[in-house]
Amino acid sequence: MIIIGSDHAGTTLKQNIISYLKSKNIEYMDINEDNKENDDYPDIAYMICKKVADSNNKGIAICGTGIGVSIACNKINKIRAANCFNTYMAKMCRAHNDANILCLGARVELDCNVNDIVEAFLNTEFEGGRHIRRLDKIKEIEKNNKGGI
Ligand code: RB5
Image (cartoon, rainbow, N blue to C red):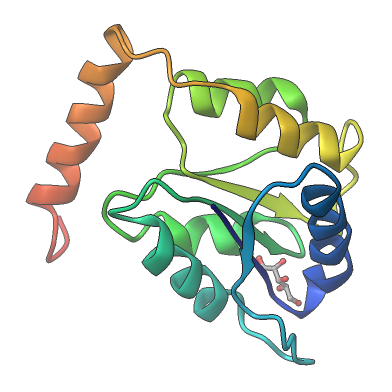
């Protein structure tokens, strides 16, 4: 299941991606179907994270730049959110970082069609191997820095 949501800046892009998911029969949940004029990206990011952490779900979080949602999502343990502009980044964030949330910027010029980025994210598996050691180090950082450094 894909958990998707956007702030006000990303509503149109979200709807376009939802059309794409529907056309591919990919199951999704729109976390804020009732997009409002001033949806703050941290609220949307948090709602998506709650459905992604501790699950097999993946998320797509959208704001104007993709930066705000990625900063907010990455505050949550077990979330690895990646702001991607092209298919290479989308593939690599899955293959090497096991990213579970794709962040997108609706006001950013992407290097390709956004659906290609979504497809690369959804269709690339984590490679495991040496990357497990690195993800374990991120888990250690999460565990040891709850109250700040
Ligand atoms: C909203 O105006 C904008 O700040 C937000 O969508 C995002 O780009 C933040 O990072």
